[in-house]
Length: 289
Image 1 (cartoon, rainbow, N blue to C red):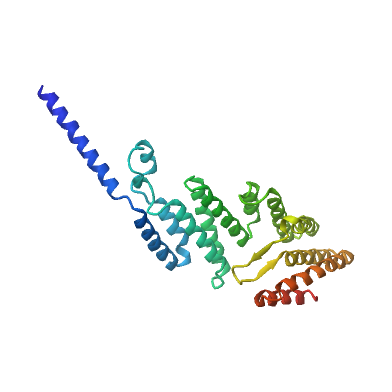
Image 2 (image 1 turned 90 degrees about the vertical axis):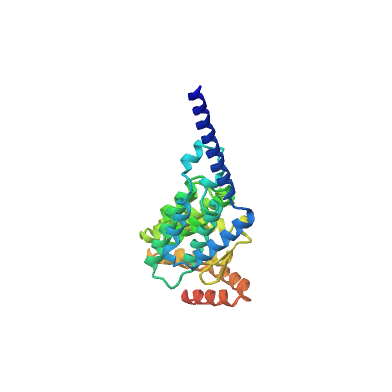
C-alpha cells in the first residue's frame, strides 16, 4: 500500500510539473499586438545592421528556437511557441527579400562584396524555402527575389535552374523566354555569337507577343523605366553588334534598321520621364542613332 501511495504521489507531482510547464509555455506566447511590436523592433535592428550581417542575422533568426523542431514534432500538444522562431518564418522571408533589394540598390560597395553577400542570401533563402515553413505566397515572393539575385551576380545556370522549376505568377512562355535571354548572355560571355543571336531572337519574339504589350520594368538602382519597345530595340542592337563581331555586315545593318522604329516608340513613351529619357538618349547616342 505504501508503495502505491508513493507511486501515486510521484505521478501527481509529475502531472503538476507538466501542467505548470504547459501553463508557462502558454503564458509566454505572444499576442498579435506583441508580435507586431516584436517585428517592428526586429526590422529596425535589421535595417540598421551592416550589409555584411544580413545573411548571418537571418540565419540566426531562423535557427533560434526554444525547443528543437524535432522535439516539437514528438509532443504536438505543447504550444507551438516553443518550436517557432522569435518572429514568423514568413517575416524572416520578408526580411530576406528586403536584403536582396538593398543589395540590388547598393552602388557604393565593390561588386565583389555585393556578389558575396548575394550568394550568402541565396544560400540562406534556399535553406528557408527547403524547410517548408513558408506560406505559399511568401515562398513564391521569395523565389522571385532569388531570381533577381542570380541575375545580379550573373549566375546564369542558377537562374536557369530556378526558372526550369516554373515561376509562380508567370506563364511557361515567360519562363522559356527568360531562359533564352539568360542563355544568350551566357553565350555572349563565351563568345558564341551565333548562339547568342539565336537565343536573343527567341526573347525578342516573346517581348513582341500580345502577352507583353503592357510590359514595363523599373531598375531599382537608378529608377529608369524600361518599356517593351526599349527592351526590343536594345536586344536588336545586341544582335547587330554580335553580327558585326562575326563580320556579317549585312545582318548587322538589318538588325539596326529593326531597332530604329522601336527606339523611336520608346522615346515617345519616355518623353515625360526625365530620368528614363536621359538614359535612353545616351544609349541611342552610343549606337550612333
